[in-house]
Length: 227
Image 1 (spheres, one colour):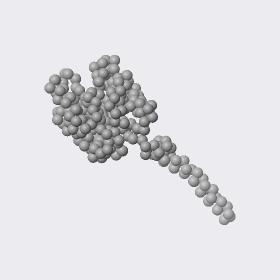
Image 2 (cartoon, rainbow, N blue to C red):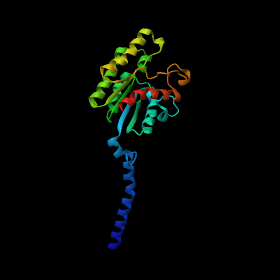
Image 3 (cartoon, rainbow, N blue to C red):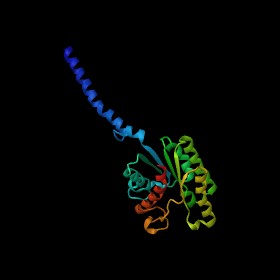
């Protein structure tokens, strides 16, 4: 009788162990996208795109593949360069919103930081001094957390109907911030896209998939020098 009880106990332990193994594996899978990721993490550098709907890929059929940060990742992969792109775009984001949100994204290591914010400030006619103050605060936080990170700023413009004085003051914010912080600078993110009907969605603001490819090339022209 004792032998039977002993054998039963052994069988229960074995079955329990067998059932527990998959759970352990799933737990590891939750934190590891691929079995080789730990080895890649030590060698792969991170590029954080921090912006608004233009970065997020608003209105595109497949933002994860068609947004300009996704297209940059494809270029990096094609060139077999060890970089991982993180799309930190959020539709509707202002520079003030970005200033509040950046700390959360900086919890992960950043090697190259690309700042694309300000368009929504301009469309709302917000004070350019506040836009510049917020952009500087975001840059300061990145520099404090990752002093070795390379920094890139993308410039933006507002439509003519905002008035010449405001449009000029707004445009001047970006080169000023870039110069102060020694950032690589793209004067106008939407160069060769803005105002071209076939390259923009019905709202006339957000690029189509075709337009996003041009935006990606604009960014790549600056980014490749920082890799």
